[in-house]
Every structure is written in structure tokens, then in C-alpha cells.
Amino acid sequence: MSGETAAVVRGRVYGTVQLRHTKRGTPAARFTVMQVPREYDRARGQWHDGKPVPVVCTVIGPLARHVAECLTDAVHVIATGNVALRDNVLYLDSAQVGVDLAHHVAYVDDTLPAVLAGRAPAAAPRAAATPVPPPAHRAGPARPAPAARPAAAPETDWWRSAPRPSRDAVTAPSRTRR
Image (cartoon, rainbow, N blue to C red; front, side, top):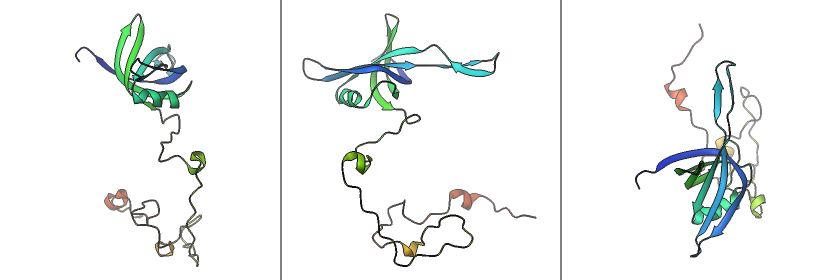
């Protein structure tokens, strides 16, 4: 559609999320995001919070159920969509809403820790029968050598695979002391 203005709103949820259903049963959620602009005061040479701007966000469809389940008062969010000014109030018809990871830790269904998901935690891998002594040049706890890892660990698991040299180590010129 022409004449719509796309915007990104970043702020805190203010109040509760209202979830309703249309006559056809489509879920619709409405919540308010308080966006506080940061302003620079040149006289003091400092940043300070500006006047809070309330933005009423509306979400329709499956996203509305997710928003109503996940968001509560004071959660930092980032919402995108089309913004309109009606009766001196900003309205955002949200296309996407997400938790601001700069302020919160978020889990999705696949990454939810086993304890929180109600499952038994996975068994820890068994250690090698003979521990490998730490190298003399390494400080702190040492990782076992690649040969000492259990054979069940797949090589596609990057967390358990042997560390690769960084790109900087390959491209940076060697520096020698004189």
C-alpha cells in the first residue's frame, strides 16, 4: 500500500498485553511500548533520557498469541511495522515483535534448558580412561587432547571439535622482538 510509513520501535512494554479474538476467531493483541529517546546535552556534555513516547502496538494472527504469552510489563522489545498518528497517539501495526537481547536472555523451544523444559538433563560424556597432562606452556585448566576425546563425539559438533587457527593468525604478519 502507498502512504504507509515503516518504523522500528525499541522500548519497554508498559502495562499488560490485551489478547482478544475477532468474530472469525483470529487472535489480536494490543500493548503499549514506551520509547525513551536519548538526547545529548552539549552544554553539560552528557546524554540524558528524553520525554517518553508511548506507541500503541497491534498484532494480528499467530504472532498475537506469542506476544500475549511471552511479553509482560517492563520487558524490552523491538517492534517493526507501519506507523500512523491518530488523535495525537502513535499506532504501530506490528509485523514483527521480538525481545531485545541487549537486555534479556530469550529461549526458543529448541534451546530451552532441560531443567526448565521439564526433561531430564542429558548425560555428561564419559571422560577418557587416562587423563592427558596439561602442557607446560598453558596456564589454567587444560582441555584434553583431541585423541583423548570419546569416539562418540561427532566432528560436526563445532563446540567439541579441535580449535582452528583464527583468521587473524593466518593473515596477520608475524611480529618479532628486536
